[in-house]
Amino acid sequence: MDRSIAYALLSMVFAGVTAVLAKAGMRNVSGDVALLVRTCLIFGLVWGNAFAFRQLKELALLTTRDVLFLCLSGATTFFSWLFYYRAMKEGSVSVVATIDKASIVVTLVLSFLVLREPFTWRVALGASLILCGLVVLVWK
Image (cartoon, rainbow, N blue to C red; front, top):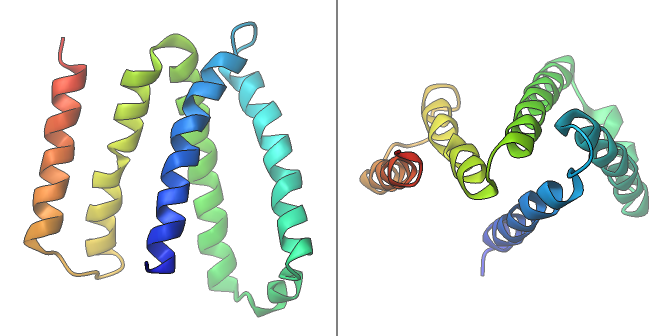
């Protein structure tokens, strides 16, 4: 199996578990406080991972452009997580997680427009099916 596929499958499993654990952990606090606790842990784990695998030396390889895009990614991650946790606090995990995962459609469109990745009939069909599934799950 291609390593990128294995990593993506692991990411899928952990992301699915994350939603349920997050909802269970914010019974008594706001989504913002839950996000704060989660992010503090993530901060430590990310630094520990980079240190353990001796990747900190790669910081010197970053260009100004790289840093700009990574900072923009960090800012959009903040807003994504902020609104995700607020939605999770107010709504049901199944609906919020489904809408959140539909972000793949935004990712696909931007990957074609910005990164010039190939647009294939399989990608178009897959994105269409995701959107159809989203409509079925959230339609009242």
